Amino acid sequence: MPDEFDFKNYKTMEEFGKSVEGTKYLHDLYLRAVNNPIRRKILNIVNDLKQVSKNTLLQMLIERKILEDEHMFNYNMDFLIKAFCINSVKDETNEQIFYEITQSGKVIEYLE
Image (cartoon, rainbow, N blue to C red):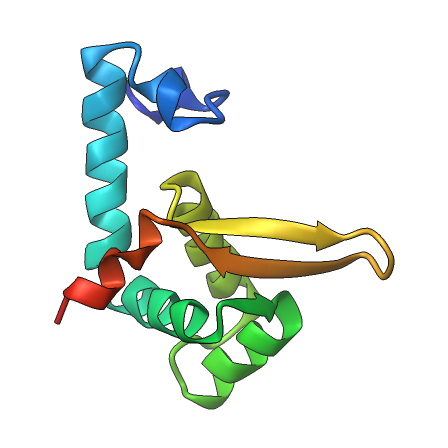
């Protein structure tokens, strides 16, 4: 069975869908993303706000005691981005990063 390193360069769902192993890997990644309690809270916040800056989201998560630091934030956001639940958008004018929910991430509206 392939591991995550076999798929590290894949950038789209279509690339994962070219093989059964890729599809299984993406499905597993997606389930781990949306079933994690911390990532569910992140998805709910981003879904409610539609678009939120990295700094604002990090501050909200720390204030609500969902996360303790930026390292935990980066780990969970990277996971959600890799699972195609959240998009990262960089504003070229001020170099700020924003996050927005994807169609896959909107599954959060049907959970709980």
